Amino acid sequence: MEKLNGKKKIRVSVFISGRGTNLKSLINFSKKKNSPIKIVLVITNNKKAKGIYYAKKNKIKSLFINYKNKNKAETKILIILKKYKINLICLAGFMKILSKQIISKYKCRILNIHPSLLPKYKGLNTHKRVLKNKEKFTGCTVHIVNLRLDSGKIILQKTVKVLRKDDESSLSRRVLKVENLIYPRAVKKFISSNL
Image (cartoon, rainbow, N blue to C red):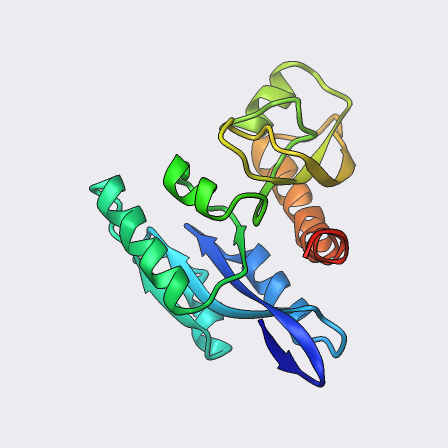
């Protein structure tokens, strides 16, 4: 942790694989006067992740980690996280499942945002399954990562109404907008009660 404006800031690493809209939202949050976080590192498993642009634009170090060998990749990640003195990891559309070695090392200090109202629709293809089952509501959830997929303690959830005209892409867009809103709130809530 480091002091900024006389207050301790939590050093955060955000893990991304794609567009990085949640990363952008967290960066904007980190710049606010009373924000409890400082994003010091972005890690991606995708060289072409669009989200890298937000890291560069905001002068945040970004690193590509090749996941061909998961064990090697995660050993490397742990060394990097230690080097950057990371206190909290935020997964933001990171399309790899972290193994026990990272989860146990950062126990109760890894957050993830998932595009459904957990415990419903864990895993992939959430919007497709929501539509197939003719759900009236869906949403998104920020939770603590544990060893069971999308099963950790829920920090914050927000509901999104499923419209009759929705297809996967329209529903995905609307849920994503809500994700961008609640992730910073969830981070703030988590830090105030846990760190």
